Length: 260
Ligand SMILES: [Mg+2]
Image 1 (spheres, rainbow, N blue to C red):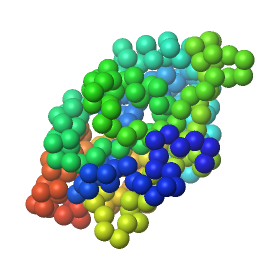
Image 2: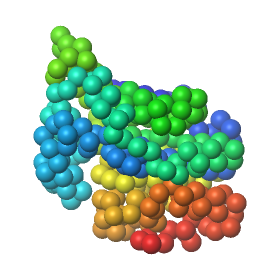
Image 3: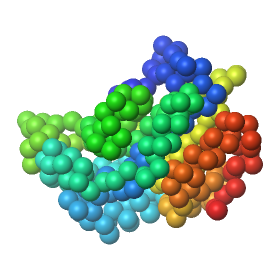
Image 4: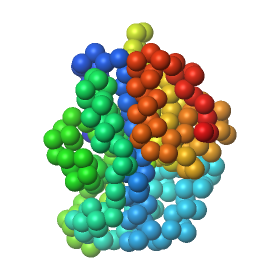
């Protein structure tokens, strides 16, 4: 693996098991914890625009090209210095209105939250610190892609930065890599995943219960691939179901009701 930002590595320690939790909540970041996808926002407003971006997403969803290629092309179309990208995103990207409440509940109830993102680490950290608070971010494991300077440039120069992928997979960041060691444990916590789009396809089949954002691409994928899931509109829906499962009121099977 070229990059292992925050991943468990090969030493056998799985970070989310440290507190011996009953459940682990894996989640996408862009468009799931946030209302707007920061990479889509940059592409639509600073890069080649919404039409080409949507065509790229569609091609990935229907297996015509890889997420990695499509995403590289999206990011290459953004020439804006990185610090200006972050400043623009801080003004335009908002948090799911019920995420902070859910996150507080997970901390009180020993349910580790692991962010698995196709986005770039500095942007995710800046947005989370701004939206949820610096202290909260320290309690989240974030596994994502990263950013690097182009040869002879700084990331804050015009056309100065490039996306640095997490691993060598066609996904750029294969989210199943982080989940599988937990799924393979003989006795293990309940595993949840929440996501919204094409960056989540690598994670979709790995957990016990998948939350897919209503009306988004991940729902289409789950239906086509027969992956059990339940839709959510915002984190209040997720909060209720996760709490009910953790408290033993319903099973993950009962919760996987598809489109609601
Ligand atoms: Mg997303």
